[in-house]
Amino acid sequence: MENRYSDIKIIKTEQGKRYKKTVVYPKMIKTVDDTYIIAIQGDRLDNLAYKYFGDSRLWWILARANYLGKGDLTVPIGKQIRIPSDYLSIVDEYNTLNE
Image 1 (cartoon, rainbow, N blue to C red):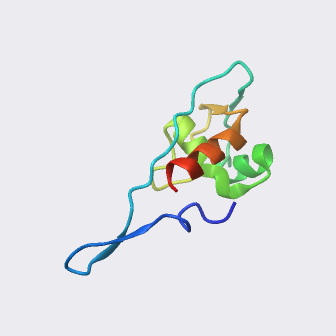
Image 2: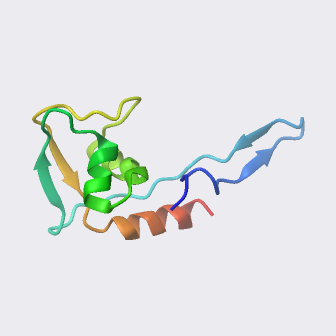
């Protein structure tokens, strides 16, 4: 997956102003197969995404699933983090919603 914003459509207004279409994120329903961890010092969303998904660019999945990441990729020490097991279907749904 490349940058998740690379395929977002650009909309042009009648006045000629250009902007990207609003991004829609999929719902991330909890499943019994999800993994849960307790964050330790130094944990970051991008590093956890690399560890569990093999791709640090998927940090946004962890952020959305755990209501984190607004301006900061660090994870509070001691916070329980849900790692969605079906991240590939989340990426597929994201791509479908934003075609």
